[in-house]
Amino acid sequence: MDTGTPLKILIASWNVGNTMPPKDSKLLNDWIPEGGGGFDVIAVGLQESTYKSEKVSENLVRAENADEEEEEIEADLLSTLSSVLDATEVDDVEEEDEEEENESKTESVLKRPGSQRSFADINNSPSNDSIRSARAGEQLSSSTSESAAKSSDVIVKRSRTKKSMRKMTRMVRQLSNNLRDSKGDALDYPFSKQIYLHLGDSYVLAGKVELMEMRLYVFVHERNNVCDVEKLAVPTGLGSVIGNKGGLLFKCVVENTSLCFASCHLAAHQDQKFLDKRNSDCSTILGAQFCQKNVSIDHQFDHCFWFGDLNYRVDLSYTAPRQRNHEKHCAEVMTLVRAKKWVALNQNDQLKHQVNGKKAMSGWELPPALFPPTFKRVRHTLDEYLLERVPSYCDRVLYKSLPGLRANLKLQRFSCFEVIATSDHKPIAAAFHVSRSSPITSGSVEKSTLVEIIDLAGKDLLGLDLAGLSDPYVKFYSAPSNAVQTEASGSHPSTSTISNTCSPKWRDDQVPKLHVLCDNERDLKRVHLTLVVMDYDATSKDDLMGVASVSLEKFCQIRPRYIPFEVPVTLHGKAAGFLSGKIRVTLPDQAFPPAEDTGPQLIRVAGCHCAVS
Image: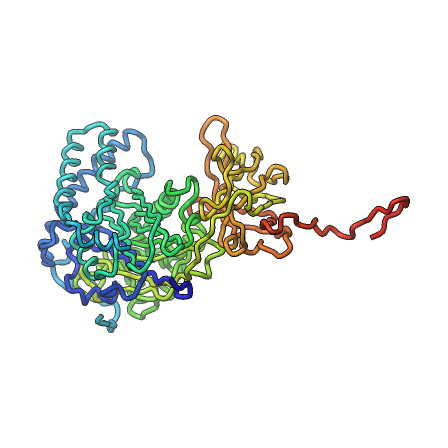
């Protein structure tokens, strides 16, 4: 494979609104190009992606009936679980507003009182061998829509008989953790089959993850090598048990580059408590035990992509703080929408302020949404909004690379697609170019690279003890995960513990010397040290205080010497202090580094009591 040609990655996301999407492939072309458009990897995230059968009409009356059925089931389920969770003292759980699910009740005509035009003109552009044999030979299954509905009915009936919380939790987890491994099973949802056929025979399904109404599909062009696939579904709904909200994680390695995709549907609504819940949902998903223990996904993989119906809202109080009722707020937002003031709208985006304030997704890149708000649209119209909600950029894409690889990932475009109008959300897509990498050659213990750290210190770390202090120590991981040699016991190297402080300073003899299993500079420059800060607890499990990443690239010197560093520590997307120190890297062919230059070197001359330099 030509390492000069970048990997082309497409991230496509859509809240389908539990209605049959358009069957005309031409309408999908701009969002997901027919035949794949030359992309190497296409990740498709869907939310609220359930409808009764492939034959469901786009007639809104039938969509109403389906929504009403699902609402009744969800209302009973949430009501029952709320009472059970309250009885067991489970706090801080927000019940989802059923109005968000019942989109079609108020949309039986194309124009309604309370809906408004946003802008006059819309740009309507028309728009390896074993896997291939498996594609030809598999018999595709198509049974899950009805079985999922039956499972929901069973859950509701049992909840009404007030079974124990343990049994209820087990049943819900059974429903939520709907991870299927069969490629044939992937096409049980009609829209996924449509996308699969739309892409054509050149693409294979690397894998999928599902959680109730959320779906994530990752397609890879057959010209690329794919390996090391892992996946996980993380529910963040009621009690972090129900999968009506949550995140779907999928990791793979494509042409020696590790990629992670997180398709999410977060808590809804405008108010502060719901904003806090969204931030909490992000932390829960980032902190899921996925691949490396205690290491959040944005510190493990070369490049990460986070997308979906994130539900963050436009709030004009950021730039113009004053009291507004809902109608006044909507009117002011619509004035900006009609004037196409996308920058002004983005300046009042909740997500932008959470990222900039390091309250959620700290260190992630958030492309500006330079298009109309994607929510809450009137179905089957191009430019109308239902003003029962403030028009907002609920559907977003974020991305993050390891520090030494940031220059390898470039955003090409981030777009919204107006012509697809069956849902109250508009689909979005982001295209990226990723520089290809050569494989890292595994070194041996005998020919490993020595990494020494001195003057290691922490600043403003989290205080997790009752007194507001911690007992921090640092464990050393790496990306790739097998680059740092572990101890004989299999444990990762770690420092000594410094007690009762949020600003620890380790003596040099309290920090282990690390051995990186690379024997050449080219490979070593791609390695990142992952510094995992833990709080020691003598009576219970140690607590995670945060994670930091250090690229070894700048420490590779012709003459090994100590070079200072300072890196931010984050805990599941939130700022958690800093780590600093000095690092010296010694490759195998530099096995005997010269002493540090500490000034004039004195030479003792035999028979003389003076010294000369």
